[in-house]
Image (cartoon, rainbow, N blue to C red; front, side):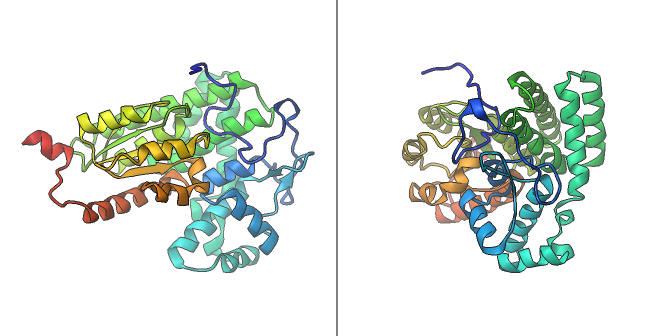
Length: 349
């Protein structure tokens, strides 16, 4: 197997559904809102948990969202559109309102459907992310640290994930795809953010000495995108879990061995790539001792297939997936032997 890093954005592929030739990656025209149309449809799907197909259907049916277009016709969305879509998706789940009603509310300026309901001004967040990314890509280490500390002072760790870390990782890949910067600048962004994630994880773990459960996380063979599993690591530690992060590009048999030896409560895997996804699902079907959760960009379009193999899909932003993992884990326990002991119980006996 080729183990060399791919010449590909680390945290997100920009056009997963129908990429143009890399040698002719186009420049994007300005969106109808007047903002810079930053994100591809694949990136928006990753941010929001709304499939690429559904985004196209909403555009045809409701006239929303209206993206910008590249010279070759690829859709590009602004950050404010991403925040609006996240609000629509969350409100639809929380209130049971139809998507059509919520989109109509957006056009009327109703506050419940406003992007500010997702945590503040979309424009303000875009400027914050842009400032940090700009400093990183010119190699300003001191300025980058100062800007990141300023953002940390504004937000809790979970809000930092939602408003800085995950958008920053996605922007790294999207910026490479737009030809805004070469691979080395994309690496300046992602390496910095992964380092900050590790610091946050260590800090949270130190403050939570008694975990409520143990979670294995990682990515399967062929997937070397680490950002999603690191973010899940942090978010689940914030929820009181102890996480064993096994890293990237690991054969399923290694996860099986780790489950046997470590006796975790659950396994959660991040799928950024859809390559060989059915084969990986078939392999994961053999793990029955613990619930197997699958998330990441590719899962949005493979939820039914995941369920068919006995896996539990977690589509959408990681911040939203974490409480869903908690809830699904409790349901899994209720369907399985109540006598099954947690790892901490097993070690104390």
